[in-house]
Length: 75
Image: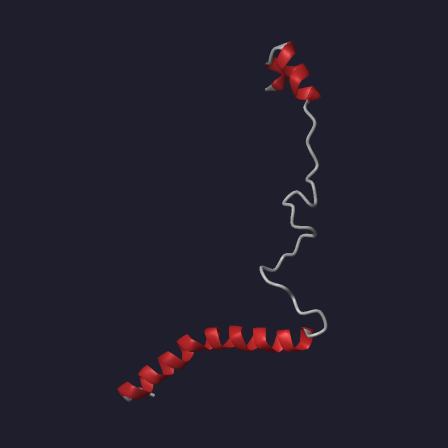
């Protein structure tokens, strides 16, 4: 498709440089992938709390389903 384009367009495309992303572009220092301050030495406690939070949220539908089945006398 570019081969059919006029010479001026091909030269412009050849001149365009792809800018490399700037690591500190947002002005807040180093980039952190978590939206909160991660505890440095307390990784095990953080892992336990996170696991408990995720497991409790995952288990709610199963607990509700078993409650409803027991209430109806099906199980």
